[in-house]
Length: 296
Image 1: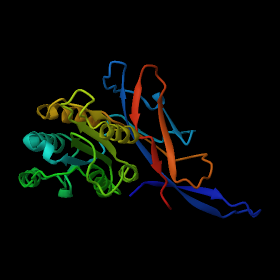
Image 2: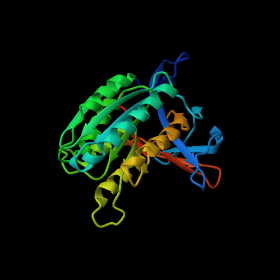
Image 3: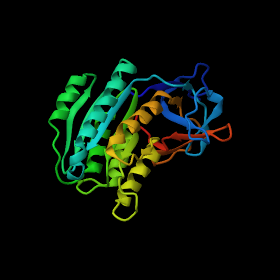
Image 4: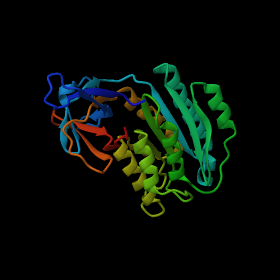
């Protein structure tokens, strides 16, 4: 469940012992990675190095953790369309290698799920810590036509929403969407409602713009930026393992910032714009750019 604070607000009735109204305030958690001008991860920062703005209003950071070890809920989304048939082995082996590192080296409550997509989307392994279960699911994976990327992101958002701890999607694909029933905005909304960071491993063996699905690449870039993830672009499937390792380093060096929204003007729009800024010069922060206010 989302943590909330109970604020006691006096009710001005003129009596000596005024009753109070208790107002629940949603705790907003923001995960952040910080890099320097050389694109290297920066650790060891303090709460005073960060600023958070909610709809443009500065907020007080109530909870701060560097290299947070909050449990991870990771949904790995594998593109198994016909175009990746010859490289399917690299996808499955690299994903399993990532799963082993996640389970064996992190928080004992870290869990992982596996979703595959071509023209259809399947949750082939629900959230688990059992590597054997993931291995068995991988053996049954078969490629097919179509790429229902947005449907896959939407399903991952539904599976992640409401879970405790950090929530992450890792999408391995070589192109854009060709078969989804849902649209980009539906997928984006699902990821934001789940408060999940989306990391895209976009394999682009075609270096020239001609022949590339630039629309799909731009969509993944936008989803990653808005959710505090990023896009990695290995040139071959043989280098997938390096991209998974880079994502794991990001997850192991995340800062957790949390606050109770204060001094915000009433609005009908339930979506809040978030901005995290760095006080020290020369540092760049990656964090989600918004959240949806919960109905209390």
